[in-house]
Image (tube, rainbow, N blue to C red; front, side, top):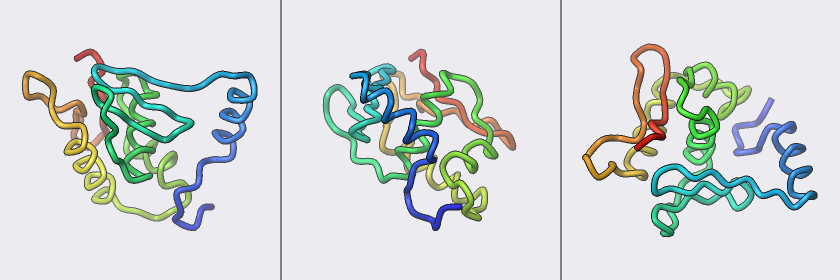
Length: 125
């Protein structure tokens, strides 16, 4: 159980250490965004987007889902492992993440809310 800090899951740390030891850097690109796992940085058109750790972890979870629905339970397990938070906390973080990402050229959000189920990153923009 975590103490509420922004620590990574041990299995994620191990996987990332193994990949980095072999010269593999995990970078996701979607639309005009680039998410660098090692540097914990997101850029939009090359410009860094300052994201607090929980928003970064939430975005990482959505990106790694490759467009599939991420349930609220999955977000709780991955981002807030062992910490008791309510659904309002998730909604607040998603709202902050939407604000940081902005909208696409058509004025649409990058994150879709599926009522009572979870969220999906709309990667094919």
